[in-house]
Length: 485
Image (cartoon, rainbow, N blue to C red; front, side):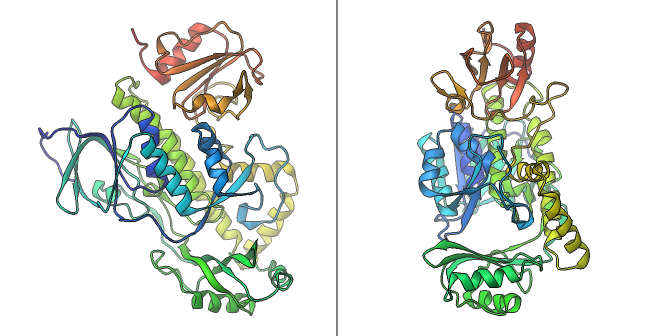
């Protein structure tokens, strides 16, 4: 980025998003809910073809439900219990997780990316593939984005959702401190040539050697295979089947006769966090802002959750009703969440070490996870339903997301599909008043709540609890700006 004078070029878009992965596509859809003009620029000419399975955790499934996407996701995914995520320690799901969607869904990565891109397109976003961002220049009015072919696109804001090697982040000069990859992991799906009983016995015999290693059956002879790599390698270069076979023999003494891979991938354990998420009119989200080892399956989920946090705030800024500090709450809220994810993946990685100290800690933690409170705390951390934003003093529920509950004529999350705030009023006395163009209202004394009223932000987090109109108005101003009229 370099300094420039304001340009007279027209603002063709409100927001340009670099990258059409899950984060970029979800952000585009969130912005379109508020009629923001969005252009998504994707360097790749075609969507990913390799069929890697990714996991959608509880909080991401809640967000899918809020935007009317959950049924489509479930049609293409496979449900499994919300268990066994933390350092691959095999414990059952905690009892009665506080969610109506307390499970995980495994879904092919190309499918979830396609579903989110179609969602954005259906809402009116523009997506241009084969267009790589190579330069940017911002001034008081907007950002000029330069593409590899020399074309320039003008917008009010630019959001970098372009991955761990983000061009946008580098052009901004935003630091990305952390640790480089020291260890590599191979992941894939393939068939095996030996009976499942033999595989299970061999894997069980290696459980005392903590490391990223497993073969989990999917049925019909297909297995999810994870095995340490010989060296970190370049994650952009997929491994070969022969490399899998060599590593399986090195770890397990047999390659299990693996063949017919569906997809093969490699990951490192690089761990980095952007020093800031915003520089003027340019913001970062998803892997452009944070990278970490894949253990626990949090990466895609963290990016989608970034997008839902940012979308309504950026839209409010563009629509002119955002309170002054609103857009800055994106970094204030999401960067600590990412820092916590980086820390828990660091901890999980240590627990996979074969060294005596980490092995002893793993044995101790395995015992502690027999206590439901410990198991619950770790699963809530991995699945992001334990996140609480700091909104200041107030009841514990303030700052947390509200679970999907029964309300009059349906479910709570169905009322959040438009990406607006919601006043859920059990007293039938309150009103959003001059904020009704931004906040919906449901008066329902039968709602399954143990508080009189809640004000929900568009991302489903509780902004206020109470029963006093004047107090409510103050919080409406804090989150939704000056009332209309």
